[in-house]
Length: 374
Image (tube, rainbow, N blue to C red; front, side):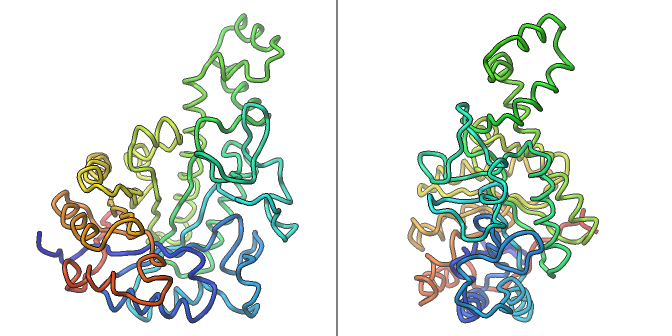
């Protein structure tokens, strides 16, 4: 299928490519040279900041750089000069992934361990394993919601970013969160709906999980509601500050998995207008499977946009090209490669990107219009 006049073409840029001015300059050059038009730069990786934050500590990875080095500021200023749009990528609830604690006492893991998601045994983890990447903050905790909202809106207020990008805006899996706060808040919600006898029965139980065991489907919805509530708060807060800013989210590509195991109801976000652009992490190597994932988002998008993700790190350039052609036939509004670092051998060459440019990104394009953004 022929190239479109407007098509989003981006890359996720992991925080390891924000650690020096030289890396930033190279990333921008490679993007422009190969006809990409936006970058999604990871400025909140693990409860830390690759920018001047008023709420979280400076990332440990920047310790070797001068105090006035601000990666996000440089990406925005230099990216805009080069004609790129820059989206600030912030990991939402995922906050740490090591048995070694963060150095800063102000880091959320050190300052507020009571904010971390817990299992049914009331335990939290700092390290990854299985479907759990590491420590997450509890989505139902009002203090967590306020903190995360502050972090996102701090970026919106102080940087001329074109968009903000949610990642890990979900639960890791159904094993979380069962902290005392969640149990208390869920109990309070259900007590308004159940009979006095049922309330007395459950309240008398010595099992701290009595309510979640009695109402498993309701508890799943309770968890979905927490994520949706935060997305809505940040969406409306960001638009109030900058009406034209784009709000985007990286989501699990299968709506069933996202809905039932991550409690990430992205279909509702699109339907109710609290998301401008969905960026499904459609990383399947097989193109037919990839198409099925993207079709799910395309069906649910309504008047919103879909920038289809590509698992670049595990596929050849030819496979990437094949998926871009397939995505165009499906009507995708654009594409985003995960990730810049793997596509360029950690910023040392752009041979992979040149192949894509020669086959499907021959002409420069602008990002698609968002008519609902005034």
